[in-house]
Image (cartoon, rainbow, N blue to C red):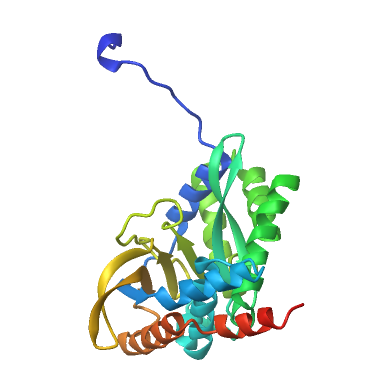
Amino acid sequence: MSNPDLIGRHSVQSLTLERQLAMDAFAALPRSHPMVAALEFDVTDALDAIDALRRAGRRVSLFAFVVRSIAVAISEHPDLNLVRHGRRLARFDDVDVSVPVEVSTPEGNFPREVVLRRAQSSSAVELFACLEAARGRQLVSGETSDEDRWARRTMGAVRWLPRFLRVGLIRWIMRSAFRIKMRAGTTLVTSVGKFAAIPGFAFTFDTGPRAATFVVGGVASKPWVHAGQVVVRSVLPLSLIVDHDLVDGAPVARFARRLQALIESGDGLLSELSEAGSMP
């Protein structure tokens, strides 16, 4: 028998549906060869514009702005909007961004999926409103979105099946790029910076069936060359993970250059400010 003094105080917990779904989904991911880029962007001007928008009564966040910038850059570089379709690839025009939104549940805090459809055509203010609406729906119905509802109900119905059958079902779902787009979008953007303002990068270990995923870190004040001088600026770390089986390095480099231009210029925020200034 085990010695209670060596084990000490402890608790044993059952797997929640959310945790089981995550484990099964990770096990079902197709093999890939990820290429990782650790990028840093000067977001000082963007943060100033966001503060001005908030003072003008517009609700927006840096994360929503970054999601919008990623979607615009992907729409201009569609190689990063590829999704595996069996032994073929599907390239979509619309950029549907899957965003894990952390919500409180009786079992604890868990990320729930929200897919921002045609995010390249939305403003940062509109994307922020969509994310806030999803949190509101979860408080009322317990589900953030149609995608979240479908995933939870499907996996809840089969959770008592043997694991190999559950994983096989997810693999079958992932064989169709059209099912992926409908249920999980064409790319994923997640954030760790909003939970702890700690400088540094975080990475996902795979892109799944999609060409690219992104992890947004926390803003930190750093020495930065700006206008020919070294000054302290607000710098955002962002990790880009690309499936090298689907995308080569050159398109990724061109995409990253365009993303830098969008984020560091505050693209889209100035037009929002102009509209806010014309409001009564």
